[in-house]
Length: 388
Image 1 (cartoon, rainbow, N blue to C red):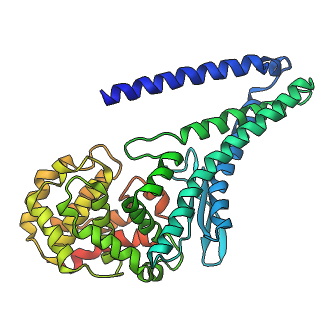
Image 2 (cartoon, one colour):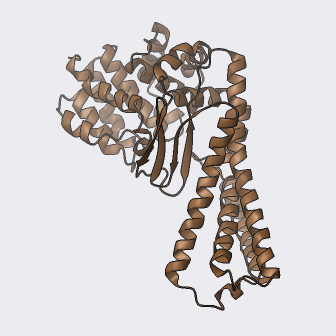
């Protein structure tokens, strides 16, 4: 019933949006733009230019809010292009990836979070940066509409046809970005739902900041200096098995496993016992909603138990034989984890293939730019050198 209501809501919004577009085209006499011949190549070029301008403005608005609050930027990507800060130098890179193919992203260089007041300050900045960009996109659309109306009522749209077409595209793209910022799906949050989530949900925000620290300059030192944040993540990770069904807890456990692989710290006996108990109870796939994050955690748990010798290899093999068909079904990283599992559990040497075709998640085409993300995979691949 809930999904049916959502479909009806989407349908109603689509109809209203269509009526709005039609009204706009009539009232603003869009047809006058085509009284003079405009080449298709020109229209396409103006659309691409308006798209580049609008997306760049949106992402730089995120970046600008971080900057005015003295949080430096680490990475900004617009479509296939990116600006990456390494130490003190900015580098322009051509970086094709699946995440920013139709948009962009801005990643801050977060400071260490070593107390609760620092956490609240960073959360405030981070959440408001999410809010700032769609508002700027809305302002862009309004400014473009006013500029177009000025040309229209001055009877200059046929004289400045290209500028008028560009403004029309900016209006539609600006409003599209603004309204898409309200979208919320299973694993996709628009800027407005994300703002609300990170403003109100401490646990989600703590995990998000922990994940973003991996992308920071001097990431290892910043994580080690983030005593308060790490303690909070460890606290949630320790009680993950006592709160079944909460996927954020799995994210906490996965984060600390990755930190151990990176050599930031070793997991204590309580967390190791939690992982072993979760494996023995074998309820992860039934108690937690299906998602890429859940399945990746499952693989990481298996590899961690193998590395530490907490569970015999034959037992892990039996469990993977039962579970493997349910994990990452139809997802791009399925083949990577299939071979990685055979590499670690069944002594098949896929080292060369795994290093060449590293693909541990749907976001890796973007986040693989950051060295710690690749290093986690390298260390997992190499762990069978010492595991017998």
